[in-house]
Amino acid sequence: MIQTVTGNIDKQNLGKILSHEHLKIDLSAFVGAHRKNPQHDRTLALDTLYLVKRDPYVLADNTVIEADEDVLRNELALFRAAGGGTIVDLTLPEIGRDPAYLKELSEKSGVHIVMGCGFYLDSVIPAAVRKMNERERAAVMIREIEDGDECTGVRAGVIGEIGTSGIVTEDEWKNVRAAGIASLETGKSIHLHTSLYEENGLALGDELIKMGVAPRNICIDHVDVVLRGAYCRRLLDKGVFIEFDNFGKEFYAPRGANVPLTGRFAYDLERCEMLASLIQSGYIDQLLVSNDICIKSMLTAYGGAGYGHIYDTVYDMCLDCGISEEDFKKLTEDNPASFLQGGDGD
Image (tube, rainbow, N blue to C red; front, side):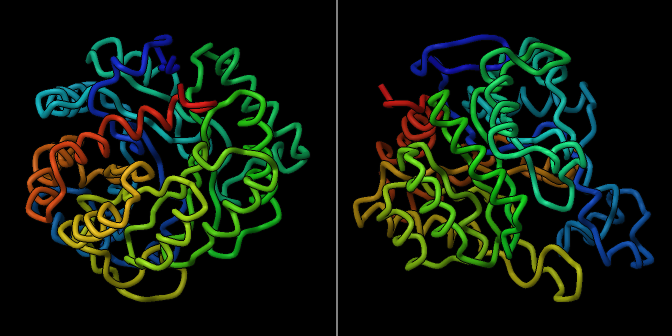
């Protein structure tokens, strides 16, 4: 069974699944040097949309998706119209997770929502968490999976996205190992947020596998900003999942100190070409796809492609790149359902 914010359902009833999204999030803590930009405090609108098409963090307003029920209910209606059935929300408490809001959205929209749990990047880890050892941190995740969030009782159905930086810090390693303990205890799978530009997924995956976590219960996220076929294959050869989760993001961010994004993101068509290559190499059962909508300008209400982008547009790109209908179904239904199932996958 799959644990959603409204209760358990059979994985056969999930429909098309987005395996990595955010329905409410606040990334304003990560804008860094952008605070000095004279444009930074402007509101996202038609006359500023061009700014975030280049660098999404240049406007503070773009780094926050608020709990706007009218906007999100429409976004989810469009997602359903595109054929979507389930969204996995990997927002963690440090960046705005709101369990009650997720439950309300699910009940009113008819979209199944699976909530994540755990701890994010070192720079936003709460002081109280820093005092915890790995088992104490794991206990927090286990409690949210088994009993629910302490304020709402809404239960998490997956672990992550566990945050790691370009240089993985001591506290981040503790969180990764805590996630491993929680996975072994509950059978839930782990999403690992990895740096967009380094190849840390190799060491992170090895650490969890060494702890006894099944490779099929590990997903290395964000492998599709800079496309590196050799890196992807080295990960896949460990037996883990990898996630192409930046569909809809085709930025060219200026290089500079203290900015989170630098250089060109891969284009969606290039992502599809890489997926086709990996499928041809026999890795179809280890691939996940999503949009990772984490900025306002990706919503249709603000000029973006929305949560239906994978089904509305990427689908055609996949077919053009030689990915079959059957394999597209695996990418968007069978694989994410199996990953969410965790445990032995049955």
